[in-house]
Length: 310
Image (cartoon, rainbow, N blue to C red):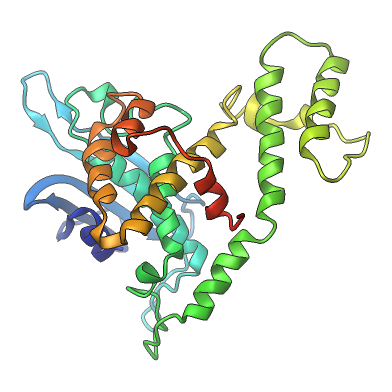
């Protein structure tokens, strides 16, 4: 992954020899054009009493402090991959690789910021419907043959992953993708409409029923009361913002295919992405930054392409 990021964005990772909270945690300094930019801490293996899941935490933010001195950014990436032993390395499934790329997308978005104000540097101040754009953009590369063949090999025989296996991975990802997409659209449209006024119980049901007439291929049973337990919009912070899941995918798929079509490691868009998106943090609206990068509005057709829908 470090080699890939160096080839794509010119980020060099240099291991730091320091004592951390666990023997399987590591830290690396990030250099761009031989200049120190940030530090990242990686704690990737599962162990007893460790919190489950995977996440990026922005520990420090790039900015100028009160004395006008530059503060360099730092961040953690924490995962729960299979534990290594004295006889075996930590062997990752493909979805583990996707997770690692996703969290690293968040990390470099935070770490490579050059903004001087703390509150809008890195991931700070980035709109809710764009904060997943850099993470989804990077995770898409975990399905690209050129990228997978840099590291995806059998840990004993060193046999590199075959084209047929990569094709199966992509087809598996895209299985029933259209059904999943219209389901997400149902959730998103319902969320926006139900937050557009004060409605009675019956009116809420009527709104959901009308949306399902447009989006559902299979009729939902009358006893279904999904809306009463839609936790994302009631307890998860996504009220009137559930659409952000899909909108961030639109942005990420659009830029991703520009890089792929130009040639991953010869891409002008990849270099401009680093200079425009990663460096700017939340100092400008992502709508402005996207137009600056692509010289146009987002193209939703790329999301269909990403999901195998022509």
